[in-house]
Image (tube, rainbow, N blue to C red; front, side, top):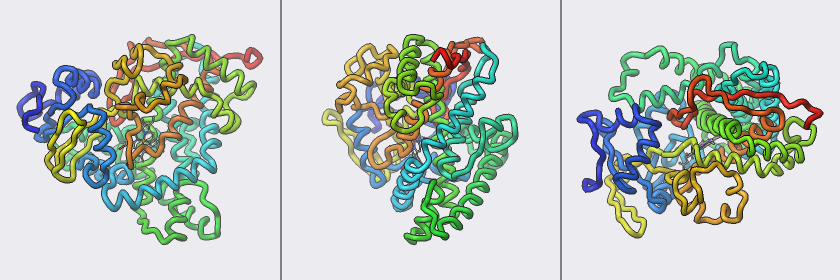
Length: 467
Ligand code: HEM
């Protein structure tokens, strides 16, 4: 490890200033990857981390969990401290216990009410956009954050937060997006300042987490009652209650609040960012917009959005748009991991010996926007590439893991694709989308997800008879 190349950094702070102040963090890592090769070292304050881009080594790291590799301890501790401990940051036996519960809970939610919950929120969003004046700047990321939060709360707890309708009223939806900002700020801070002094943003984040935890506890108590009377679970908390009452699974109150919060936070910003980037690409690619519109006209007819999952599954071009957005703007381009033991990994060409406790940063999607071997004309936004037979070849997926891989693969992938595809299709079916750069050019900001900044669009409703 000591012979790995390292970009120039500062004494004490190492590479943190370059990562925080430069362009979005993953872009800085990509630039260093170009100069220093597939494996290099960086210093995050006193911690040395190894950045890895070899697809084979990354696949091994993701597969050998939770035994040999884990999420970075520092990050897990921050999530715990903020009160959001759950599946994402659990390790070892705790993770083995929580993972099947989460998978079963999400499956229950998908099967029973995911579609209705998503369309209810999409309908509210459509109404809100319809009510906006033609030509008004629509802050799509904010709107889509409320959409994904509303869906996540509906699916996990069966509760209608109505974050879209009540957008100007106080509530967790006003502050929840601060959670990832706060986590990121704490992660990048050279000192754990929040243990001595809380900034106003820290206090607001903690208040939002407390508020949501109270809601989860309430909903779980109700779910227990319903399940005791023989009701079949309809959502994630009911599924947890059933596992506890019927199967005797050990689930504490903390398991429930943490798991649900964790699920909401893991799914909200990532999916909202993907849908918001999709709106950006649609606005700047009118010919793609036109094709989504033509597909929607054929599949949806006079409906505003798909009537059922069969209609949704026929929106293949809209889904290709989402996949292409994820290729160019993956919401989670890297992970922060750690080894649990001394180990050696290899991709057949190089062998990397890693000491126990070393922080590792696998670049999950490196090259997806620049490698012409896997993605011809990589810089071009071309949804058609996802409709070709080549898109189904395993080599296409090599080194492109936007949802991770192995035993900790993202359990929310299908939900994220459903939510985003529905927005893409609904938006083009109901509106002409134009870019609005009055706030400046669109940029990127990394919290735990890569979010678009200054993104606005203008929406012109398409009169119903014209559809
Ligand atoms: C476009 C949207 C999304 C992206 C790009 C994304 C990406 C990821 C990635 C990269 C991981 C790490 C996987 C690994 O360690 O191998 C992950 C894990 C996770 N995601 Fe997602 N995700 C998205 C949406 C969602 C949604 C909607 C939910 C919840 C409903 C969700 C819940 C989770 C959870 C709970 C984990 C932790 C799983 C575990 O550690 O066992 N994600 N996601």
